[in-house]
Image (cartoon, rainbow, N blue to C red; front, side, top):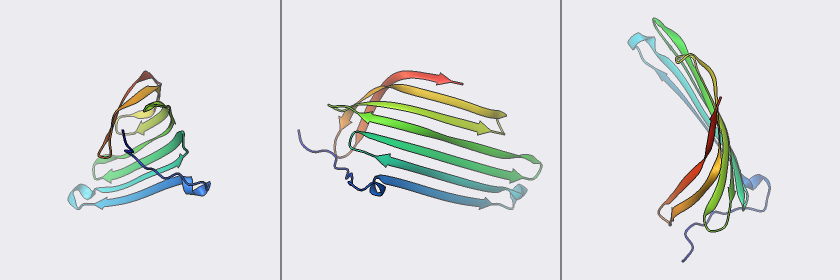
Length: 133
């Protein structure tokens, strides 16, 4: 057995954070389609656990069609155990005017194990429970 992954975890509080923001704008002449998208994520990493949050949004307008708004996001906590075992817990939400969905919440918790853990890839399996509201 050898080292398969090195992920630096700084001792400084702010160096443990990571964040991303992506914005997009699409405009087409056909049906006067205008679409604005945004994607964002932020996370915090410790030696034994991580916390990640995401938020995504889409707004679309088009001739002769009702405007579409979609928002989704989530919060995920992962606790690392010995021998490639881990405990993930998450909550996510979705709202979508096109599907007439005001709010859907999904909660998950369980236990997982990385079955492939090499320097080329990582594959884990997860078993747990899910609650949809």
